[in-house]
Image: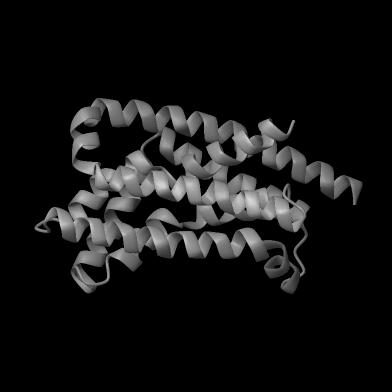
Length: 208
């Protein structure tokens, strides 16, 4: 059972972060940069995103408590949000919104701040990833298990960082068709996980 929980957490976080979908956006945001500059942007964005998500992994329940929100209620709300993201992934609407965020950043802040916005937030550590992190935190109760969740987050962010570094090769390898198939497949998986979150949330609310 513990392995199922760990695998579910890893898959949920990886799908919501969506490294393959970030690769072409990263290339668009860093147009004109050399490989070293791109590497620095990817590293800074990954560190910022990890810090944001780790904060919610460790203190997500406390943050919810300040607003009087129960884990059960957040599971239902977060599950619905993740299902909406999955729906967008299946019908390729999410990528369009990410591209619009990238365009806004180039216009307003240009190259200097793209690592923080929009790459780290909201493209890597977006509402879906933050919601998934808080939801998963409900299954990792004590300090030791929360540390495991942070390590899972770290693994996902490291993988995302590597994908960004190899973005040009991965984008060329997958092509338009490959990206479309992979995004839809991940969307279906995320939809199933979202339904499970909602079901668990409803059970918690009924039991409470």
